[in-house]
Image 1 (cartoon, rainbow, N blue to C red):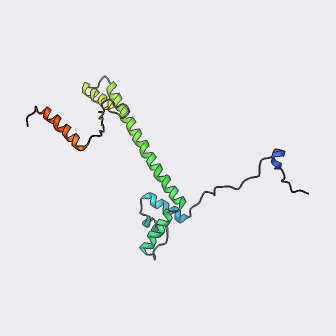
Image 2 (image 1 turned 180 degrees about the vertical axis):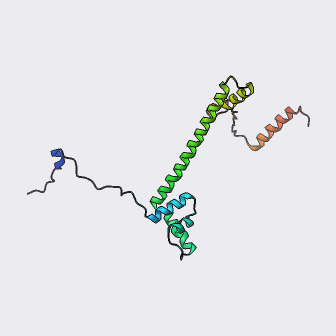
Image 3 (image 1 turned 135 degrees about the vertical axis):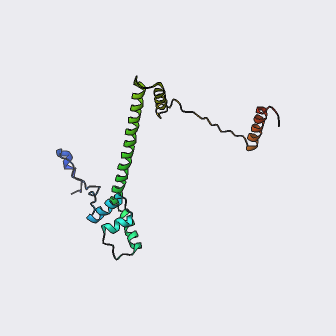
Length: 170
C-alpha cells in the first residue's frame, strides 16, 4: 500500500476550508486600575500622579512610582488609547479651526456683498478675502537663486553694483 496524500475533501465536495487559527489576539482589556490610570493621564495628571491615584502607592518610593508609571505607559493598549485621545484632540482642533475660518470667510463675503456696507469696509473685506490662503491674490513671491560663485566673486559683484548705484563716488 502506497502512502498517497489524500485530496482536500472540501474542494471535492464544495465545502469551505477548515477554519484557520486567528492570527490576531483579542482586543486587550485593561484592569480597572489601568483604566483609572489612563483617565488620569488624559485629564492632564503627570504619570506619577496618575499612578498614585489609580494604585495603592502609599508605601512606595518615588523612584518606584516613576518606574511603574513608565511601564504602564509602555503597555500597548494604554499607549494606543492615549494616542487615540491625542488624535481625537488634534482632529477636534483642526475641525474647530476650519469651522472658524469658514465662518470668518462667510462674514467677510456677506460684508462685501451688503449694499449698506461702507465702501471702506467692502474694500477691506475684499482685501482680506484676497489674502486668504486659497486665493493668495496679494501674496508676494520671492524668488531665490543659488549660484556657483565663490564668496569673493559675490563680494566683488556687490561692490561693483554698489559703486554703480552710488554714481562712482567713493
